[in-house]
Image (cartoon, rainbow, N blue to C red):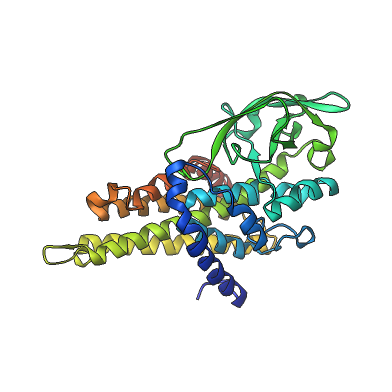
Length: 378
């Protein structure tokens, strides 16, 4: 029995696990090989209520609690972290701010279609010179009276090669410092926008790109919420996102552990399954214990979110622990597989590549340690 689970959580877990097994798993090999997200999943998941599940039922979403979100993420990442990454960029990063602060028209025109999977979103924050240092954004949106003029560039933007819209962070008033950073809802097809798809080693089934904005005319109504200044909303989005990513990493670690455990039971050397050798058994024992610890920390942080309580320390702690646990578990899974771990027909090297992404993405391990140190008074 999991702490904080109720009967509905168990029912949802079983339903979504079955969906992942029947609808997503068969698509993974092709998506990874071509580095292309199977976009038909968005309308399918939208019809079933699996998109933007934390958004309000008022707009057609499930209005799910954070525990349910954690369950979905773990199950999705057990099957494919690349697909989970594109889901997250759409279902959380690009839509959470619209749900929280969008105007009625913005919610109607962008959020509602996103919940249905009819429009796909991307969250354009990171820049070549502004990754961990969000306050260093160079992209600008100049108010020209009847419109804004957007200029700048973004990089590592998930879904940007095929997104219908992007939520773009840009400076509207340099003199205001971080208070002068605003968010804009940008139609991907506007003139002046160029997207180049990036070639990646990890999360290959998630389309990622660099985006260039050159004198892009944005209507006044594209300013999120109709007013400038969105830095705190960005930070709130990223903070909850740390718990989300931690759940993803628990799911990935679980998949790597299960693959290693099955191999250790089946692979025979010196007359017995290799899992009976203490060196291998101890690796698997450590993997199981560390995954359990990470899962419990994620659930604890999710519970705090559901109670509307602050969880800055817990969010950074579980993101740090889960991402680094996923790397260790995946690395050991490769080791347990031996030479087979290097073969593309086995998924464990993919798990390791994908896990490494999240000691960097959505807040590096070093940034998480900085936040934790501050929270403990250093």
